[in-house]
Amino acid sequence: MLIPGTQMFVLTAIIISLELLFFFHQFIYYLYRPSEKCRFWYLILLGLLIFYNTTGGFFPDPNIRFISVQFQNIIAYGAGFLMASYFPFFFYKCFNLKSLRFHALYGVPLFLLLPYLIFFGVIYLAKGDLEYAIRYGMIVPFFYSFVIIIAILKAIRRQFAAYNEKGYVIDRLEIIAVYCAVIPWVSMSVFAYFHVSQLIEAIVTNLGFLLVTIIFFVRSVRRARIIDLRLKAGELAIPYEEIFEKNLLKYPYTPREIEVIRLLRQGLTKEQVGEKLFIATSTVSRHVQNIHYKTDVSNRLELMRKLETE
Image 1 (cartoon, rainbow, N blue to C red):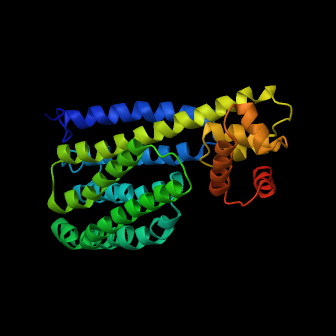
Image 2: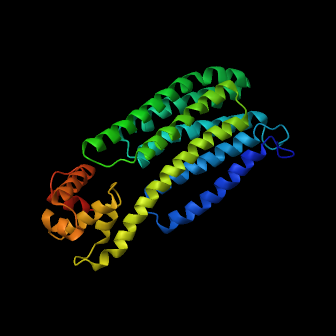
Image 3: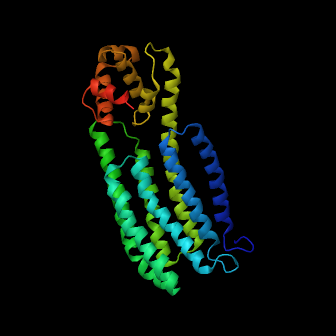
């Protein structure tokens, strides 16, 4: 069912309204704690999704007099290209998938944004033939979207495999959720090429975003637990400088690893750390190994130097 006087489905409007509420909620939270860079990248993702849903819902509409149908199409398709282009960058920054650097910084501008600028920003603007722009302008993005999906999935698999080799405990539900969140985004270029209806497009792409949101919240809960540990840190003997505490949040430490790091910083041995935390020395050693791997250091001195330096 359409909203009277528009081309937008009621369901699309409901989705946009919920996303706007969620955006402002997360934005306020970000203003309260601006050091959480992942939330910043997430807000951009959410903002682009709202823009994508809004333009896809309203445009093209000949009843909108102040913007020509041609420009409406350019904006609507541009929103889709922006959304698809930002997604690899989001995974690169927020999930720390370093192998995606080429795609996020160079591949996307070359194989997604450049075809859009050529075929929609220049050829379609000059000729006014939308079918021509879609037929030829979507060829490279269509195939490159599959390359991106494969690259993201491989990067995620390599990261989790590396964690497993180092003895990390990986939440398999999170792995499945990440895979499922990535897959719907390949459909964006497919939908554009085959003119799939707005309703199906909105449902599928927002389903992918919903899964990304679930993953984001899982990680946020873990981060909140770490912050809670920071608040309780006053009972320890050594003062915890702001730089040290800030650096702790840069790495994907578990709450237990945070406790181990703090005790190591006091100069305790692994045996003493085990006694303090009521865990075996071998367990402490495994935590230390994981900590060193996550921080890319080989000993305690390097670890402390890295965590205590701006």
